[in-house]
Image 1 (spheres, rainbow, N blue to C red):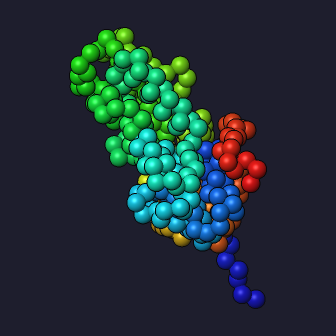
Image 2 (image 1 turned 135 degrees about the vertical axis):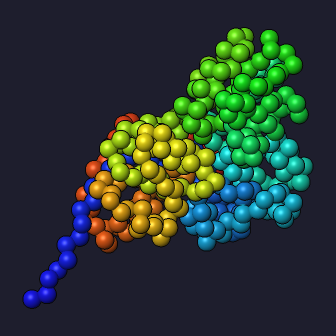
Length: 318
């Protein structure tokens, strides 16, 4: 009788919460309902969320992704991405008579309104975020040029020299590292004691919760895998959180990007997913691991998310 090779054991610690947040759920649903209402094609300015699987799935349903509004034909419906857009974009859409829907995450919209109020009150804003990220571009586009200065690192916070230190405020991108941001804020508050911060936390609940969940499992893992896109800020931060806890970590978009060599000597593997990655991709990865290993899963839950955001009024009855 032939000998059956036993699969080596692999313990999986799966972080919870992980994957889709309420803002991503809402944005995807807006595109789907727009397609139901208008039929294909529905144009989407930029990736609706930073996930190739999600974008490709919507593309097969009839969504057409474009970079700028001048690629949208007159009279066609268009959706703005969850990351937010400068004020000039809806103004241009309105001027052209386009039927547009804004899928900006409500937590990003909250930062936009904060920026408007602070500038109206005469304060210059030091905005903590990553250069070139769509959310940063969208937030800067809410206020007049020169009203905000980007601060990316604690080093930037040490050297920034605003013209009027007595009339400063700070705001942050919603998908940053909680620890990095806290260090930057401490530096700004030490240098500019009169600086005004937001009443509530700008880093969104989902970003914070996913980082806390990674911290809860990282020390128990030999390796942590993060499912997410390379242009997803919150996913990249999860890799950094694990590495700061002393655990090696890799980002991958789908299971087919798994390098089996990463698992050499690994007995306990952590898994999480960024806020734009669907649970289907987590299960896909677990199934792939089960091809070579006798996997045993344990979900480690640090909090439970029940937040849901309303759809735009134009789609509520769709």
